[in-house]
Amino acid sequence: MSFVPVIIINLILLIITILLAIADHFLVNYGICNIDINVDEKLIEIEGGQSLLSSLYANDIFIPSACGGKGSCGYCKITVTAGGGQVLPTELPYLTRKEIRSNLRLACQVKIREDIFIRIPSELLNIKMFTATLESIRDLTYDIKEIGMRLIEPSEISHRPGQYVQIQTPSPGGDIFRAYSISSPVYELNTVELNVRLIPGGIGSTYLHNLQVGDTVKFTGPYGEFILNDDPSVEIICVGGGCGMAPMKSIIYSIYDRCPDRSCWLFFGCRTTKDIFYLDEFKQLADKHPGFHVIYALSDKLDDQSWDGDTGFIHLAVDKYLKTNIKRQAFLCGPPLMIEATMKVLEQKGVVPQDIFYDEF
Amino acid sequence: MAHLITIFIAAILTHNIALTYLLGMCPFVSLSRSVKTAFGMSFAVIFVITLTAAINWPIHRLLVYYNSEIISYIVFIIIIAASVQLVEMIMERFFPSLQASFGIFLPLITVNCTVLAVSLFMVLREYSYIATLVFAFGSAVGWMLAIMIVAAINEKLKLIGDVPKGLRGTGIIMIIAGIIALAFLGFGGMVDIK
Figure 1 (cartoon, rainbow over the protein chains, first blue to last red):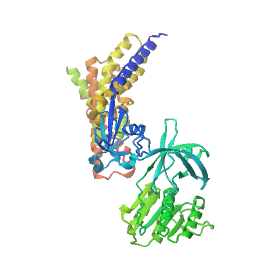
Figure 2: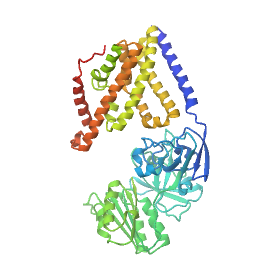
Figure 3: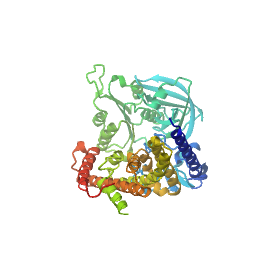
Figure 4: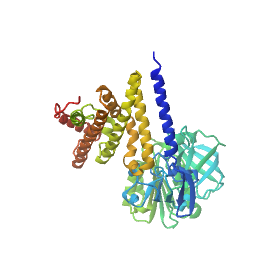
């Protein structure tokens, strides 16, 4: 048995390692680069070679990103006016031609190699990292929990109804962020409440479901494009399905805190009676406010004797109850098929697409 | 000289690495849906195959000299992986626009069997250094030719749009590749690779 091959292979490995280490030191080192945000509004110095998204995160600017920088969600779009290089093939699936023309890029795919000039909506600059302790956990159904958190640092949150936060979830490959809508109304400044459905194998929901009262949770926020029309004469339509209740609850309670007489419809689609939650709370609210109508519809097990409400898919209930041509704004949250079907019904009822906001999951 | 031209033409046509040896099939199937991506991938393949063959030849001689041919497979693989890494770093630093257009395909090639196959063929057929370079370049150009033909046909088919539903994607590409491989059989006997 000769040892020569062993020695040779080790030598080759050694040489390659040294070569790669040298290359890494001299080639991947880009020196200090500047990130200029909104034309001199904020200037960040950062070591080059990292992605724009992670550089911004390191400096407490939290751009929405659901996939954690893997280039698979397309949320982290920001405007790069100079210094971002070409649009990469990995970004193309998420950008329309119009967006490419207006210099939009995916922050997670842009690598900082030189001074870079970007524009971020001032709203995103206000996004903060919150630390909170878990205050309450309540089972809403067999797989959905209501999780209440008391804010510690900063101690107050100012958000619009229907916005969401991103929970920092520890995982073996480093922290990842998962988005959850806030279900507490906007006037509760010191608490954030979430509705979390346990998804088997889901990283974020498993983490949240296993927490105990008193545990510390970190999250960033608030994010989201939902903008509630403040004109009380505009009727509000909320349509949710599955566990897409959180933003609706926040919207409805926020509305009735300020305008007790505003007209609002809540449509919520479940499979069976086991999936129903918050119905009693909403019925109480409807007793207090005659303008509030709540409709739950079951889509499965229609022979269930204990249910005397609506049955069938939720967009059919929307079609059944709403009259046409009333000035309305609609918020939808649920599975893509439900959103698609409901959008069609709403458009037939005369709601223009600009007045329909939706969250798909 | 004539010998080199023979090797070059044989590597492209009669012994096409994709269509007669069926090597490099994973990128062949997955990237032949549009001519543009096929083109980017082909360039990366040409570059990496020629480069790694050029490095692997002297290293193989070294192994033969020390009577250690037994480890040639593993050394080839290490060299291929390392040189792809290095090329990617150099390209990202100095040619960012090139990196943007075909650099993202480079990591895919590290695990491409075509690259290893070319290094193994050069050993098997006992090529000289120059012949190795010509053969490597020719093989890669042959691979490019094959993937470009299939991608172009695939794009045209998409325009006509009457591919049966179950065959769309991978299925139709396998059929196209098979027909083109049959067509390439027609070149058989024109030149020999030895």
